[in-house]
Every structure is written in structure tokens, then in C-alpha cells.
Length: 257
Image: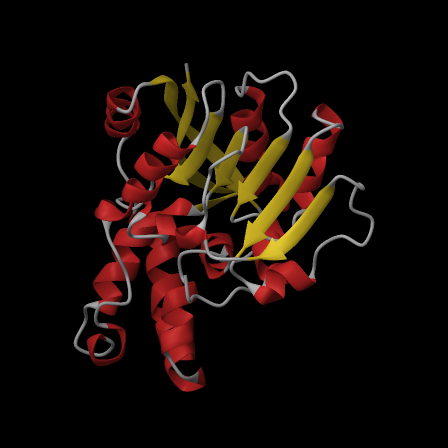
């Protein structure tokens, strides 16, 4: 996961981005886990809230971005730590609850990883993850079309992935059932009402657009964003109440029984 991250940009829509995390954790059925890991935890703000439910657990947040980890809260609960690490190298052995919110889509081999973690965890342990399911939404389709254009393809070839970035809830559920786990899987489409000018562009600047911005120089970024913003305004028209931005997400909670 070599994409750069700007904590300030990412947290611009902190309420909307954090809601799936809490809805995912709410479905984890584990009364007294001893060890919890939050993979792709960002700054650890959401990780810290796990201590409220599980005050006796040892809770570790892991994120690949040094910038995110450096912005971790100064007042983390005593049983919570946030460290830099690579999801692809994580070993789930001995972990009671593994949580990952909006991170696995960045890891092309994550399907192999969740199968490996399913083998590593003990009976009674849980894997819980959420990934965006909107790679075929206009926001991402338009981004890929622009990246493939004659103007930008010399700089962006191979930078963006498509709908194959994640599986469906049914596919994930089938994999976990085959691994011997009991599964609770579902999908939700949130309709975010975003205020301000070009809010969808501002949203993707914090996530899906990061690989594009990293690959272009300042002048190229300006041209890409100007053209992309115009396309987004047509795809997501503004209303007096704000811009309606549908966002599909996929959830899986799998317990080893």
C-alpha cells in the first residue's frame, strides 16, 4: 500500500467515513476478547473507541502510513496502541478479534490474506471487515476513463484498479463458510448529503484519487482535477440541500465456531 495519505483531507468527512466502522463493530459478538487488532486504522481515532466496549482487551491499531500514525491521538486509552505496519505481513494467530474498515480494497492479495487469517485464528475468534463497493459508481468510472485518456494514460497506466478490487458480500461469505466460519455478511448503500462546492471531488481526494494525485506533477494534477470536477458535477448534481452521493459498502463478520 504505497499510496500517500493526508490525514486532514481524509478526515474532512470524518462522520460519514466513521459510521461504517461503528456499524461493523456493533455486529461483532465477542464478550471478552483478550487481543484485538484494527488493520488499516488510520490515525487510530476509531480504534480508541474499541476500549469503551472492551476495556480489558489489548487493542492494537496498525496502519501502513507514517503520516497517519504520527497523527494518532495523544490521549489514547492505556490499553490501545497505534503502530506502523503492513497488512500483508499481519499474522492473526492468537488474535481474538481482527477488524479492518475500508482498508483491504487497497491490498490486491487481500482475498488470500483473509483465507490465511481464517486458518490462523482460534476457535471463537472473529474476522470483521468492511470495504467500499462503489468501484462501478460514476465517481470511479469517470476517474478510470480519464486515467485511460490519451492525455493522461502515459502517466496513469496501471495506477487504478477497477471493480475487481473487492468481492461481493456473497463471494466473501462463500469463502468464509468454506473455511469453516459462521458468517454475517451484508451490503449498505449510504446516501451522503455533502455540502459545499465540488464535494464529491473533495471526498475522493482523501481516498480513491490518491494514487492519481501521487502519479502526476502539480500542473498535471490541476488539469486532471479541473476536468474530473466538471464530470462529477454532471454526474452528481448539486441541490439546495447539498450534493447526494450514494456510497455502497460491503460488510463481513466471520466467527470461527
